[in-house]
Amino acid sequence: MDKFVVKGGVPLEGKIATSGAKNSALPALAATLLTDEPVLLRRIPRVRDVRTMQRLLVDIGAGAEVDGESVRIQVREVRSPEAPYELVKTMRASSLVLGPLVARAGRARVSLPGGCAIGARPINLHLVGLEQLGAQIQQAHGYVEAVAPQGLRGTTVRFERITVTGTEDLIMAAALARGTTVLENAAREPEVSDLAALLLKMGAKIEGAGTSTVRIEGVQQLRGAEHTIIPDRIEAGTFLVAGAITGGDLTVTGCIPEHNAALITRLRAAGAEITEVDSSTLRVRAVRGLRSADVTTEEYPGFPTDLQAQYMALMTQAEGIAIITETIFENRFMHAQELARMGANIRLEGNQAIVAGRKELTGAGVIASDLRASASLVLAALVARGETVIDRVYHIDRGYEKIEGKLAAVGAQIRRIE
Image (cartoon, rainbow, N blue to C red; front, side):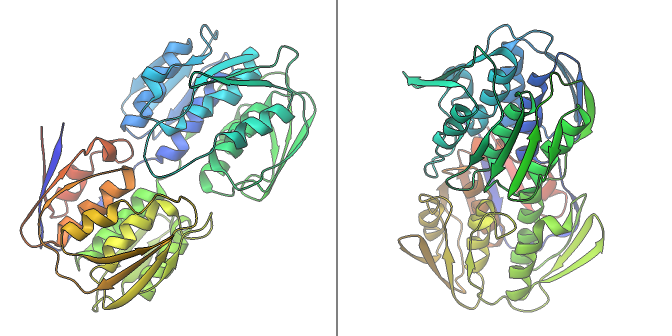
C-alpha cells in the first residue's frame, strides 16, 4: 500500500496546473451509454475513479480507446447492463450508470455504491425519481435492480434534498424518456452544467441546467459528440489552500475562477491575497499572518463540502478560533483526529469543528480516511515541522492526478513510497 512522505516548512512557489474535473468526467463517461455512436471526451483526469468507470463501461459492452487525456468510448450494444460490486466497491459514482442503462436498455443491475466513509449519500433519491419516470425498482443482496420494459416517461420530479449525482442520473434517464421531465430542487453545480453541455451536443433537449429547475424534453435517440471536460474546481481549490498555508506565491493555471468564488471569499477573509490573473488563472499569496474565519458548507454556489477538510488544515495555522460547520455529510470530520495527532487543537461538537490556531504542527504517522481527508493531511504535512508519513494514499489517487508530482514541481518535499 503506497504512502506519502512529506517534509514540511517549504513555501510553494511557481505555477501548478489544474486537471479535468473527476466529478464531471464520471457522469460524462456514463452518458456514453446513451448512444451507439462514438463519444470523444477530452481532458479526462487520469485518476483511479475514472479508470474504474472506464473498466465498468468495457464490462457493459463499450469499446474504449485512451490517448493521454482523451478517451473515445463507443457502446454499440449493451451486452451486460450490470455494475458488479467487485468492480465498483471503491467508487461512489457507480449509481451514475443506473439512469442511462434503464433509459437505453430497459434494465439495470447496479451494486450499491462504495467509496469514502464520510456518511450517507442516499441512493433513494435516484430511485424515487426513476420510479416516477416509470421504472420498477427492487433492492436485494446489495444491488439495485431497475426495469422499464415499456420505456421511461416524462414527469415532474421534486428532489426531497439537493443531490448532485441524483440530478445527473435523472437528466441522463430523462434524455431518452417519452415526453417532458421537469426536475425541481435540482443541483446547480458546474459539473451538472457540464454534463448537460455534453448531452446537448449529443442531441438532447435540456433547459435550465445550472439552476434549481431543469427541463428535459426526451428524444428517441442520441448521437456521438466531442466534448472537453471542465477544470477540477476542488483540485484548484486545494492548490489555493496549499499556497496560502505554506505562505507561498503560487499560480494555479487552467481553472475557472468563478467556480471557486466561495472559497476565494473565505481565503481573503483569512488574510490570503487572491488575484485573478486572467479568465483561467489564479494567484495566491499569504502576504500577512493568517487569521481565523468561520465557514459553513453548502450546496453550490456555497462553500463546497469537498474543500472543508483542506480549509480545516488551513485554520490550524490561523490566529484565533474558527468554527467550521458541516451541513452536507454527517461523518466528514474524521480527518480531525489525524490533524490532532500532528498537534492541531480541534474540538468536535456535533456538526461543528472548533479549530484553535495558530498551532505548530509536527510530523507524525497519519492515516487517510477518505479522498478529501487525504488532501488535508498533505496540506498539514507541508507546514509541519519534521517528517510526516501519510498511509492509505490510494484514497487521494481516486481524485487527484499525480498530486505529489505537481506539488514537488513547486517546491514541496514530498515523495511516494510503495
